[in-house]
Length: 435
Image (cartoon, rainbow, N blue to C red):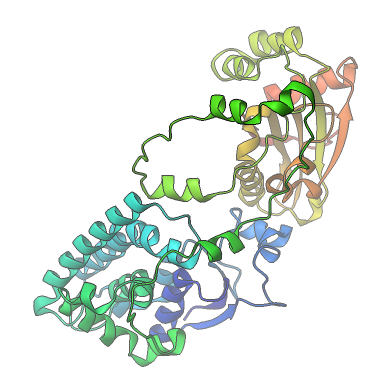
């Protein structure tokens, strides 16, 4: 029987699936959702956490035996028993069918409709109206399926019921007022049956169905957004001051027709716009994308590296060497590579202004990680954005002199993944390139 800890933040409906599954299967599950056991935004950014869960996302599960899982469906499946997963191949496939249905057909429109009412997402009328229609379509499918069934698969609750019920939980709590849910009595009957099972109630508590559809609250949305600094207004003098209205008219543009956004666009549009951290730098003649194309498509030693040194703008770019501080904690090579991959994923928005080759040396329980990076500007780039600061303090950083033989040798060895690597003292194992 599985036993372990589930890391999450409070009231995470994705984590509810695993918690309810554990209630049915008898798996011993500890939930870490509050300080000091787990603080979202802090604990999930620590080295120890990222070593096991490189994306830093929750829910995340760690067994008492050290077995680790991320992704809520995988965790819920692992904590289930045969009855929940489907006792026959056909039943197991049907359970998977409804779990996938929840992810692809329910969650996207439900999020687009519900999130604005919680202040999580900006309201977009066209996106919300489309989401309503999509939700109604999925409810109609469920209603028809449940017309002659008590549960989604078989005669007892399965992981299919748990997953779908958790996916529509916030719909019933926030927006499915009586007039909207009236055409879908079978779905409501099934949902109420599920959430009133002891195993559900232990996790969810008493679920109250929505009486009046919640609306977008602009004040709540504004409160949840990061505060923006307002630059002081400059006083205008002379002719410029005399014609403020005229200037304003010239700058006015006709509002473009509002385009319909899909769910991903809606989420992206709701994110606060951030200032380009490199905007203050002068334009550089070095074309990063051109070098990356050479590196990806042509011989590294004969073409890419000579191109690099021929075109490098040493005033606009700098070269850095990094070395992982906690080499003694590195065990399995694949976990060490996951550590590097996780860092690269979290630096995704830096790709335009950076290139790096990070290598693993040595063998199991006797390895090191180090790399060579090219960054825009002359300073270490990570402090320029909070998004880039999760991993870099786990490394020692040293700026290299591009005119030195040491730098030229390191660039050659790290970019080509071959050489003596005399400063390391261990054999090359494998590497990853950030480009």
